[in-house]
Image (cartoon, rainbow, N blue to C red; front, side, top):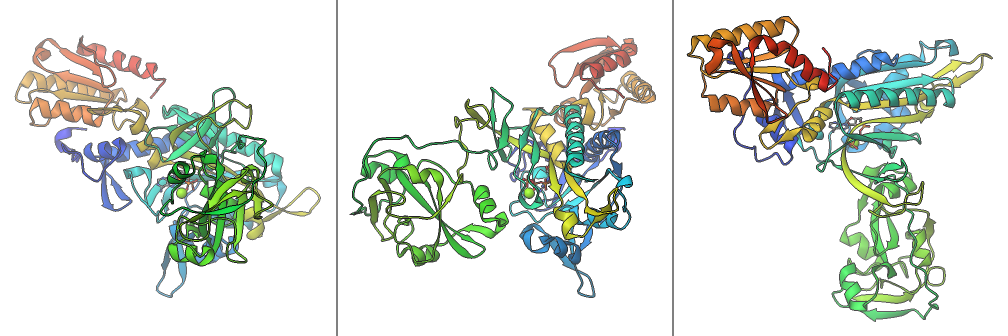
Length: 574
Ligand code: ATP
Ligand code: MG
């Protein structure tokens, strides 16, 4: 492509709305543009990268015997009612009505639709296993769309669904997809980890997330360096015990603690350890108040709480002051488990039951109880683990220590079991002619998000540093002075020659100052850089790679071989 004809609106300034590198650089490089919050257009350069990710995904899915099809984004309400997700999916679902008032959604995911699609067509065990996928636009009215392509309200996803005769066969399908994802993210050059995930609204029990490591990632993962344990912070089981002491249980007492509301202030006031406080948090779960008590030195995992209560995450919220007052009789900051309004649901993290002589809120403004002991002074529903994992917690698998890191979830795989086939009555006949529900799995890749993840891992202060596999073009030829005929001639000759051998090449033939061209070239991050300048008359050009600082002068006829060598170095082949 000749850049004089190209639509590539680069920006010199960093757009103020963009906080993270991928968002800033994709905007600045003229690859994407925002329409409204969380909705983007993919401009010519950006769309090339998107299509390349799609192609890698497609090749690896095809190689795993998954078959591509394309479904509609529009899905009728009835399908989602059958699975119970019309209610449960919550405000993320983008709902709409047709002219006859019939209700639909724009698909946030397609479990119901795929199950419905095959249920009347696949009748026998002989037609299984089956694995179908599509690469399609998804819609989710995210609470906080942000970070450019990272969290959008409209985005491209590859979603696949497997149908099997039983659990064992489903596990084979699951492993098959796991292997395909390993190949996909390896080819995309992402530094990633596979971690145990929380199954959330998908249902099912086992799931894994493919997480591209990045400091700006929204996900936190806990992992062990001594064994292969790795899980999202929402999922990671917390092995933590309260330091034991042989203290005797003292008599409970109520003490005045004016204006001492936070744990930090209390630690100072009582001059005792943080873990000796029973921290009470008040939530509304589907509108009903729930008080949760955890050790004062730890944080609560809202995902674990929602899972325990068996409600979708969006139906759990922190209670407001009026609810707190109603159930505790006190202002915020003084809630505790002793003497709550009768009938208030009280959940207690198991570890709280072992804190000796703890301090808790007094359920009276400006008061706390001291020397409170579980069992004797209050009782509740004891829950095994409601805590958020922390760095240095014990690895649940080998007993060593856990590390925390941030990452971007670029894909995930779920063992769904029969959740959707049961609710949508999707059955096949087994060898004995008996009806059985399909055992399913579902598998997603964030196609547009993956482009952002690659940029997060491959950029420097000047711009993007694309790996070949999804670079919009492989090479860029910069003609330093387009008024110089020799330069123009040689530039065009190289351009034609490289195109002929299948190399995707840009020719910067714009009538711009060299500085502008060089800056744009760094910004858009094309891997191979060829500069046609003063030595054009002798057929000599400057060759460099975006990812390195070295430049060398080479004869024009060496370029093809040099580029192939650069491909090989990255394990990339045309
Ligand atoms: P997240 O936890 O980031 O919200 P999710 O668990 O909701 O992700 P899935 O429903 O499993 O995501 O969707 C499959 C893939 O689609 C994700 O792994 C992610 O790469 C991508 N994805 C999900 N939500 C978005 C979004 N709002 N914008 C861009 N990509 C997304
Ligand atoms: Mg989500």
